Length: 168
Image (cartoon, rainbow, N blue to C red; front, top):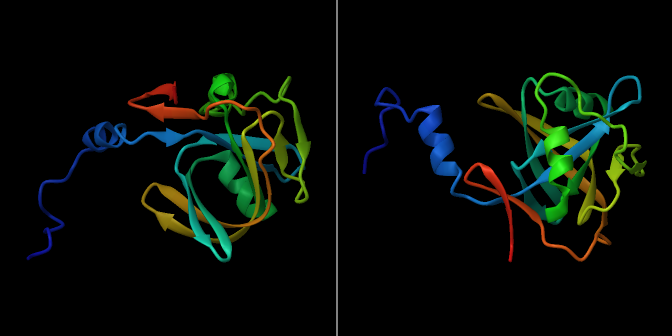
């Protein structure tokens, strides 16, 4: 077998996005605190468990993300796993440009001070263990220190083929 030549015809961003849209992902909001102690957050589907021992997660942030800067400065973040009825939270925190609107978003600080959104399916409170360049994104490895799974008895919010969906 031979490796593909890097100079061979490349997959376009549109082709790659289309192919990856067939992979259903859960929807989360990753939250932290900015330099002024104000809450920040971004919608993220590029997260995964990385290790059970120690408990590690991987989160990918667009390099221009305001939340990425806050996470790296604060050294901590929370992954809030959204339920199917929480599309409004996903849309609020998916904004490009202006910061998400926190008015009316019920939340409370976790042990690191990072905001935990009320009514989500699960919360994972993390500290930053490492970060790496990953193309146009930054890959952040977080050490999970606390979890909460007392969310509603609801299906998870999923993203598939460019739209929200749910199980069932």
